[in-house]
Length: 307
Image (cartoon, rainbow, N blue to C red; front, side, top):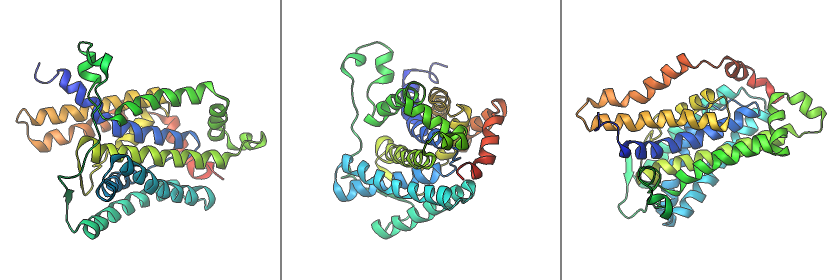
């Protein structure tokens, strides 16, 4: 039992939950303004690939992340334009975005790097690992919280920042009002479309960071379908957390812990096919035990909320 649950497991869980948490926060922003974004998987995949491309051509992790944010933001704006201005169904657009990302990254991988399946370059530099001076010296806590990439700590800060924005600022109240009742918000002079575009753009930035954490933070390579369903898990985390920052963080922690636990089981000679299904089995179980009917209702009406 000690081999299964130790400090290294929780340290790994914190690293594993970061891509899910970042994408789930983006999904929460969209949900709060009436856009049910099922395209998180595709946006994350584009973010992971563009981060590797930026690292390859610019030779800098900072430039790679900036390039990834720029690429994913373009797709996020396309998503917003189709759903908000053209009034396309958000579910259909999200699925199309996922399929586009899968095909585009596979095609670009073979075109730019002339490889199939995966790209790895020993000269690429991954995200740095930060050792926090004071926290590092604290027993137990230091072993869990120290030694992660900057995006891990940024995700934690963003949870607190988003909570403060939602519930402690005038702009946050207007943001929530734009999604809760668009007609009433418009009657008060609130620019609903502006908040929807802003939410979708912020979601693109967060998904770009999530993808960069996958391809540059956890490993330094890209493989076809690298996200492996994490975007859908992030969507479930958004639903379980009822689009609230603290609830989303708690749900992401659960899935991150299960992801790290599945890797730990592989080290104990468990069949890989069994261990790889653990996070997804927990996701399905969570949907059964923590039903969110109100959110499902919002998702069904999201196609008309932006009109």
